[in-house]
Length: 194
Length: 156
Image (tube, rainbow over all chains, first blue to last red; front, side, top):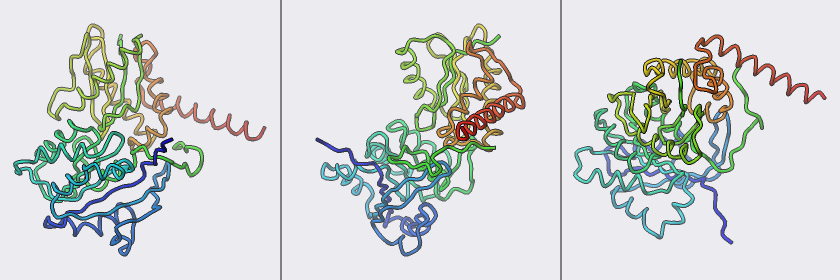
């Protein structure tokens, strides 16, 4: 008999090579997951709680750093990491995206497909690029996997022309709307707005 | 007279959050429409037209934040621009009800999203009510009745 493990782990990987990938580590982990500065330096954090106004759920956070993104991604896609990938609710990569890179399409496609359906793949781009280039990257990701997305961390605007949240707020929204396993409704009843 | 065929709400991630059929489609046809429409609409760029021809009818869509509101219309009877206005009015009404509505509100209060839509569009696809205040009033009345019902149940 096989038992399906709950998809309640988030893998966050920071680029140690990019000009500012790792400098985001503390601030992003603190802002996104409400960790303190000490916890933000840990590599595995268990039984954290993700809360929204409708539900709360428990999750584990795995934090990693890499020097070469392509190499790291290739390694993650290896068969020996099947078990890890199978329990990931999502993956967040914090790294520079270079729209001029020759193999950018292949990297984006590989990133979009690194996890199966039902998991979110978010690339937090730390490099300032034009809106058009960001959109192009998102189209490539989206063609491969509708749940893959690029979020601009250094975005000056809070919302785009559609009223969609940008940057860290969008990342929070992606985690909010993820179909978590073992969700708890704090009040056992949905509260309707007055 | 409008003859809307269906109303679909899809997220940017391609997940269907709401579907309402006003035309008698077979289950396989519904499945095909949903399977075709989501990538068709989601792959369209910002500057592209919000009206697309699909199969034997037209599809009018509008994006709000990370949500795509998609409406299948009968070209002979429906006006595309009026449909766009109807979608906008629906979003405005939900915005007023939820207070800056987001995808999470719709996921966890989908029955309210359906009720608001039901107040606006009748089961044959024609517009029942376009007044935001009137729709909100009806939905709030339903909320009050439901609360009273729950209270009665607890007290009894």
